[in-house]
Image (cartoon, rainbow, N blue to C red; front, side, top):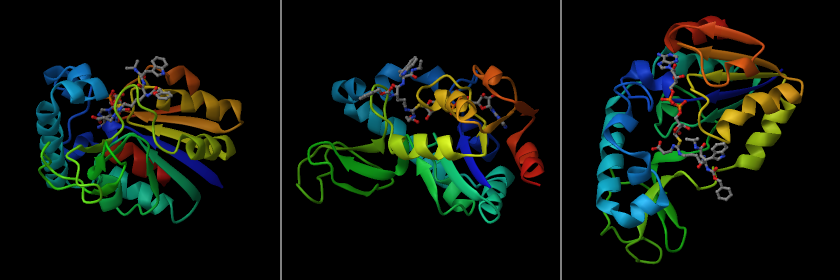
Length: 222
Ligand SMILES: CC(C)NC(=O)[C@H](Cc1c[nH]c2ccccc12)NC(=O)[C@H](CCCC/N=C(/NCCC(=O)O)S[C@H]1O[C@H](COP(=O)(O)OP(=O)(O)OC[C@H]2O[C@@H](n3cnc4c(N)ncnc43)[C@H](O)[C@@H]2O)[C@@H](O)[C@H]1O)NC(=O)OCc1ccccc1
């Protein structure tokens, strides 16, 4: 059985990490344009580093929950492709050793000059030189708006081949991730939404399970 799972901020909410669009969401305190676009980084890199340094600290202090662990268990029983929009490392710390961070990861640093990648320091600053080209063009290895998400061909292929596609804790407002459910359905997969509430793409699913991820994901995995 081939299963493709897409996760969003909702799966890490019960681990204490803020989602984006909730009333106390990340986008309440910061304008997307300012902190999650290449233009915002060019305009004020210190502000962007402060934003991601705080998220890196919060993620390091958080612990995976039963939903993260249930997906690691699922991978032992089916051919699972785990795709996450999240930049935290709670899937890995929950036991998942094969996943695709389509929007990058807080644990990564990227040189905007030469493209070199290395493990991110907890506190990243504009002065950090690249270990390869020594230029000071260090940025978080995160996919910002108007940038192409990582490993899209692999993701598109895995979803096309899936017998089952499930989306967990995502609002379905950001593309191309939000378009994967429709793609899966068109390719014949059974599509399942697991979420605390309805999302912007709930109509694209054959089946819905509503409730907190830490309860409904272990129930679904069974
Ligand atoms: C806002 C939106 C309209 N804009 C976009 O989609 C844009 C533009 C666009 C492209 N195609 C389109 C088509 C139509 C319209 C617009 C577009 N997309 C892009 O820019 C993408 C890139 C998008 C990626 C941006 N980076 C992120 N993250 C990293 C940064 C960071 O993290 O700081 S996006 C970021 O926001 C999104 C947030 O969504 P969710 O994770 O779903 O979180 P949210 O808070 O919204 O919802 C939480 C959900 O959980 C549920 N929940 C809460 N608690 C629980 C709980 N306890 N249990 C269960 N569920 C729970 C809630 O009910 C809710 O449903 C995630 O993707 C997340 O990664 N790039 C691109 O298109 O590039 C092109 C291109 C082409 C060629 C060459 C170059 C470029």
